[in-house]
Amino acid sequence: MSALTAKKQELIDWIDQLEDQGMLENVDMLKKASEGTDWWDEISDSEKESIKQGREDIKEGRTISKKEFLKKHAHRF
Image 1 (cartoon, rainbow, N blue to C red):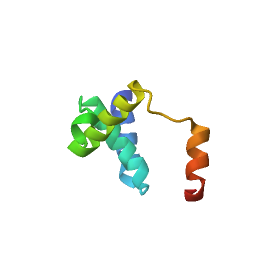
Image 2 (cartoon, one colour; image 1 turned 120 degrees about the vertical axis):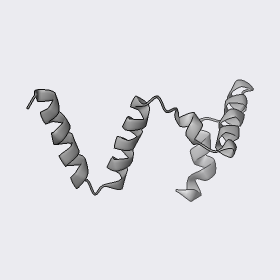
Image 3 (cartoon, rainbow, N blue to C red; image 1 turned 180 degrees about the vertical axis):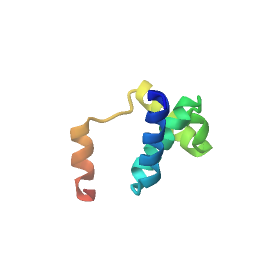
């Protein structure tokens, strides 16, 4: 068995025993990244619009500092 085949089997065995949902999602993201899948293509139109609006806000200077944000929203944390 080659070193590459052994490493693949080791990873397959490790993934097969994973119970951590977050870790499985990370492995899935790595898989998608290696396939050339772009996260932008995976999000909804409303999420894309929200990101575009946020970038426009930044360009136009409609931002506040982290300190201002925390002061305004401290009651939520």
